[in-house]
Length: 304
Ligand SMILES: N[C@@H](CC(=O)c1ccccc1NC=O)C(=O)O
Image (cartoon, rainbow, N blue to C red):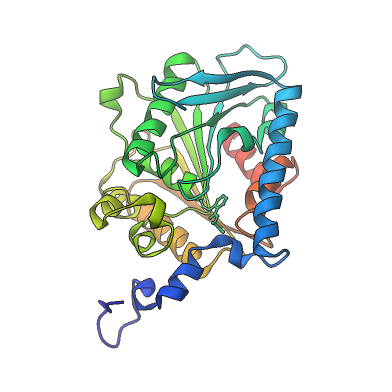
């Protein structure tokens, strides 16, 4: 691959010096799991997601498959605390990961139990994954899902966006959204960006792009890392937490750290956490637990 760094300086874009094989490795999260083999890690992740969703649907008041648009699959599941005055609650929206080509809302209700138990409504958002859906379309869908929640619950006590991996990318794109064309400004109070990808250019050169078919222009247009410095927070008190797992790959660490640094250069109220002893999948699996550090950070941010 072409080396575009200056001679004698440490590269700001280390991935451009990597072999195709190394780049592939860096962007394959399951290969960095230490507690299990790659396949078993993916299986466990999906199992825990399915179990959490089954439990949430069986035990929580919910509205399932609510359309936020006319397109196929433009649906959300909304889970409520037990005794709730439906509308005037904090709303926590979750965008699942899976490299924009796998995963669904029906296996992603990880955090519903602990958050609803504390009085937070949780919305699990579906979007049209690749190869059927394009990344531009997914970003538009996610934008409309956020506008939908604000319109349906105008007296909400704050909207919090959380995404994992590819879903963290989609959540981060909401930092750049132009809400004027959606007829509503959502009451965004916080972002939780978990093990995300914020500069999509390296993805273009990995096998992930077989389904995604991103051109370099698509990747740049959809890279919050390149755009967020010029964006203005609608509300300067809105918190942005960038989180990465200890066992995420070096490239995932770099992506999170550099995005955090760029947020700090702007007017964003950003913070950064590296979570000890967790990999790319455990970081979300553990959101099923009320005592987990990230669950506690989320609750503290919402109720501070
Ligand atoms: N094929 C990928 C799967 C993957 O990256 C992934 C799977 C579930 C949830 C998030 C993921 N990563 C980013 O969106 C891997 O083997 O790690």
